[in-house]
Image (tube, rainbow, N blue to C red; front, side):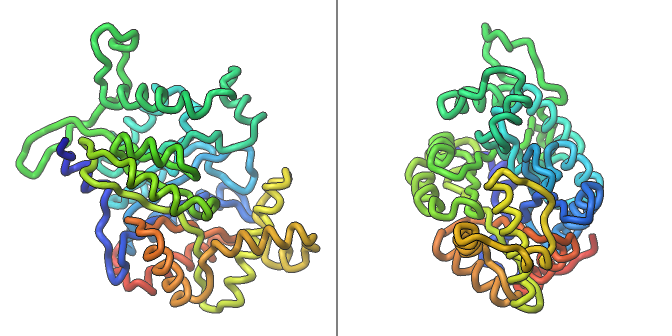
Length: 369
């Protein structure tokens, strides 16, 4: 089965400067102590414009709920806002949590985004709730919490049918259409054909890796919080891959936490604050991202200190050259086709500066936003 060249080109980026693979952005829209969601969303616009001007390939936002320090509960709304402030960079979800939503609703939202920003939208899908069980129940308003691995492929198939507007005759949804539907894209030769956002599967274990491979879809792995599973999942994805109309060969990106500052000690202070935020989240005390000063004064217990050391062992941080060396080593070790960088820090300015420093380290071109 031959892949569609347009779809494959949208998925595969072009490495710029001296980067060995395309570099992209995963934006958690983090809210630091002393700031607001409005501040965080304003930073996201600045970050998308910076990423576009420096040659990052795509900018994704994630879906999280009931987390005060993460203002990304509505990816489609944020992406529409970012689309209005950018013109070239690919925008997408990293990801939309499919079990939380009716497939028709997702198809309508991302069909609308594709109509707003034709050829620039990615639809990344996850099967976790992106929150705790009680919040998931409030989101779904049903007893669907037991739906999991067995139901996800069926939900995905239904969503894909809505996106393509191609339910077969006799199907109960045959006369239902996700509006806007596929956008009519024009090829360089002037031929028009229906086009909709490419679907990615996201995962932190082997299930989505294997499913993405079997369906011939691109795969994004959450190395930033499941590092021990990265290589097994990527191996499983590549071993399971079957060529499709989307891809002739596997394409895998990994999300990686990375933070660059001019001084290594300052980078260490910043990632300690981000780690304290994770300690609180993992122990049922989610809040705003603390300041480095608060983290330095915090009385970590031995268990918490072990968690911080383990967590930060998978964060690439330091000076720009140190971060580049760490990212290059990770790319070499995993064979990832793309690195998607998430910079977790208390301050929006620190996050913005980190991406600029990483772009400088790779010699990415600076073009007007």
